[in-house]
Each structure stands twice: as C-alpha cells, then as structure tokens.
Length: 425
Image (cartoon, rainbow, N blue to C red):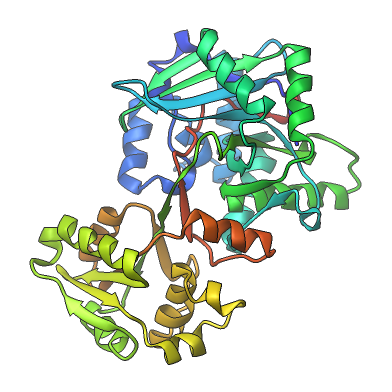
C-alpha cells in the first residue's frame, strides 16, 4: 500500500524557517492567507501549489510553478534525502506537546477503484481534478500528500510509528501559527520497512482529505498508460496514512457561500420545507449563532443561513419534502447526511442552484463563510452540520459518494515538509 521514496525537503539553513515556507493544503487557503504565506518567505510552498500568472512572463501558471521548482532545486533550497524512506509525521499542540496525530508519509500504490483498496467517500468536480493533474504534469512532482485513514487497531506499523517518534530525534520540526508543532522522521531500516509493509499489505484505506488530488493521481496514471508509457512514478501518489484507532480524526463540515442569492429571499423559500427562526444579534453575534447550530445538529438536521448581517436557523425538514428530494439509497442513511440534504433539497429543489465549483463556493471556516456572505451584495452563507465518522465509513463501505466538499477531516497535514519528485522515485 505504502512504499518508501526519496523525499525532497527544504534545506533549513537556506530558508527563514519551516513554518515560513510550509502551508496548509491548497484547498483551505483563503486569498488573504495566501498573500500572508507568500510574504512570509520567497520560497513558501504556496508559490508552487497555487501558482499565479505573472505579468510579462510567458507560460501557464503550472509551467511557472515548474520553473520555480527547478530553480529552488538548482539553488539548493530544496534537497533530496540520501535514501528512500517512509516518513513518520507527528502533529502536536505547540504549548504542551499533546500528540494529536501520528502517521506515515509514503508513496501510495495506485490500483483501479474497483479494487476497493483505497475507498473514496466524496464526489469530485472536474475542474479542480484537471488543475491538480496539470500541476503534477508540469512539475513532475507530488507537492502535497493526501490524507488517508485505516483501521490499524494499533498494529505493528502503528506501534513502530510511536516508537520512532518517542525515541529518535526528528529530521525537521516546525511551530506554526495555528498552535501546532510538526515533526518529521525518516525510516530507512530495511527490517522496519518490511514489518510495516507486512502489516499494511492486507489493509484498506479511506480517503479523509484529498479526493480531488487522488482523482488527479488516477487521471495522470490513465493518461500515461494511454500514451503507451510503462510502469513509472505516476503509478504512485504521495499520501499520509494514519491509524484511526490510534489517532481518531476530528471531523467537521464544509460550508457554502452563494453570490447573487438574496438571504431574505433564500430564507423565505426555505420556510416551505424547514422551520425557520431568525437569531438575535445577526452576524455581530456569529459565535452565539454557531453555538445554536451545534445544539440543533445534535438533535437532527439543521442549517444556519446568513447574509446581510442577519442569521437564521433552519431545522426540522418536512419529512415528505425530504423524502421526495433526497432519494439516495438507503434512505435511512442518505436523508441524514447534511451535504445530501443541502445539495438535493435546499440548493437543488428549493433554490434551484447546482452545487458546483463555478456557482457555489466551498468554505471550511464558518466565520469566514459568514464574513464572505456579508462582504458581497446578495451573498448568502449556508453552514452545515458535520457528518459522523460512522456515516463516512458506511458510505465508503457501500461504494457510494456524498456530494463534493462534504467533510473536513483534521488535523490536516502541513504542505511542504516533504515532497515527492518523479525524478527521485
């Protein structure tokens, strides 16, 4: 499932610090945060994962990212490690060192989806998949890992991860502004690698974060095979694998912001299917509104709608309308999935809006979604309840997929701690 690779990492004496050159995953970086990351260090990884077209420079953003990567390698900013390795990656609280998550970063072998070895649970949009694939084709690299969970039950691979992190000095360490400490170790011992391989070989994994990147891995592999290429580095993709029994993940929702949907009109239409209550204080009391949403989510299906500095709570969807609009099977599961109800009932049936990346913006941070809706005329934010881990595993086990951007697993791996270049694989 997971193979060693020769990682490429920042030369720490050539940059201002690992916290200054690494970033969150590409799809959770807001525009203002992107600017801050780019200003933190001229070699921040965001310049590669979210390349911008530059005035006066020919070529696509992906070609510019490839040229930038080549320069950093030539200048010794990025340096290949001496030997192939699996990398132990730890995320902990920076203040007291409480470990939140440990796992293995390696080269994930790609197999047909029908094999069921890597199980997605979420749909994808064609545009982001093509974009990530084009970036990989241009840079000939996997610049950031996807995030996988497996039910390891504290097996030998998981135990070895803990032993390495507890007893050996790390290769790299970074303290980031979100209050986390990130540490990295390399496992190169052949006996240890063999023990990990033996433990992982019969297991399956669930994609927690990175559905679009995983689909891009498969798309790139298909294109190379169609071009007549034999086996190669495109047969693997970079991944972080975590034993969910040892380190249960945090699971949150992903919210929506829709421009051109007047909030008051949206709520009036939603009243045909939901019980609607306007919350006092509007967006000035957004934290209180989020608390009310959390309580409502514990009781059943609920959404928070905001815009124009007003906030409404939607609860208790009409069973007949719910059953008519949300027809995924089995109904006992599908009609309890927040993203399915959002897509099929609220967006599709009531508002007549398609939940795609051109029309509807996905936002991870609920307060950022509320601010975004207030910042544009006729902007509406829809905040959702989270899925439960049990629901995620049930969807995946049935071979089904919930709508795009339904789940946000955490903590997410930091991008830029270790890269996988095809030339080094």
